[in-house]
Amino acid sequence: MRLDKYLKVSRLIKRRTVANEVADAGRILLNGKVAKASSEVQIGDEIEITFGNRPIKVRVLNNEEPHTKDVAREMFEILEG
Image (cartoon, rainbow, N blue to C red; front, side):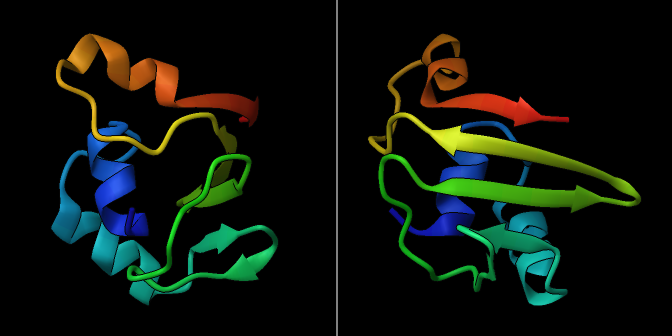
């Protein structure tokens, strides 16, 4: 799944366009490297997003699109933030 879509369906970022803008600004790291919005997300990847001066780091547990919003929280685990 694309990084921008993953961030939207997992509800880490509310809108896909915002996820694109954050990625274009270089504020998303995928496994320690700056990621583009089109980067593929795999299970076990670590994503670090910088919101202003507050970074959040999560590990991908599932990359399948959820059918309900209740399942979205089970797509990742927070490591730092």
